[in-house]
Length: 319
Image 1 (tube, rainbow, N blue to C red):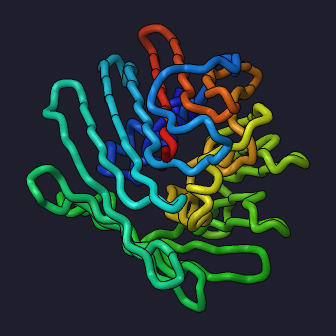
Image 2: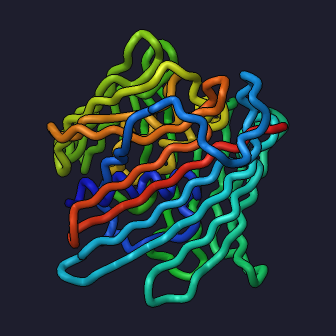
Image 3: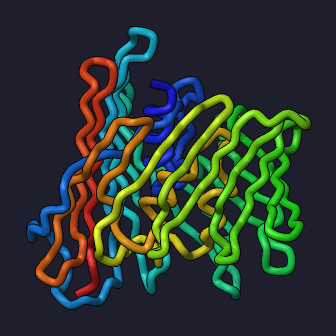
């Protein structure tokens, strides 16, 4: 269960850029799963029927109901990610936790002259800044990421990075945990391993196929996983959008976060349409317009009272 919940929150938070921290005790990992790509032409504002994949708005809605030590929790997150010139400019996020008032936030990205993201600042509907990421670069590479959640310092962190060959090492100020990210010759992550001192506590190995899609991710340590991934034959419009500052999607995560599902969804050549997680196989429900551009992906995951998940994505293109 911890693994399932964790992957889901990873998916929700990567797109909303961790708008507001959720109690770490609730964060496990969910297997994003779903249905067949039937090639149908779903309705919706998907832009023209040309083959141009320039996106304007990416919508990601998640509805999570789970039982945590017998206590029911339901969280709904609706994110509209605004895109211009294939770069994320801002995000509008609505978060509803059952029993608490709904919260809305707008996240705005800033970039330096090289186009690298230097900050992501969240402002609520009252005009109050709630949290921010500050990214510092040295010689064109990320050297530090600082996260500040203004209401509570528990989730704050400062990550520092060093580079040696194809390995990026991350240290956290005030922590004994270090994380190493190993890249291949295409600058793709092929391994993530975290250490407490010199002891390895979590490792994940990634393989890719010839098309540039992730083939498998195998994790060991605190969380054991054995995942494989399936794709359609159509271009993934998220790849170019989230390829902007590719490493930033991983370098700011938690040491125990899985990178495999994030690579599958946002960084593979084709559209993710199914996976096998620790022997359990799932498919997604993808819809396309008349020229094969993905316009929606719906995922419904029902584990009964223990866990129910709905993930709905909409891909809106420029007219």
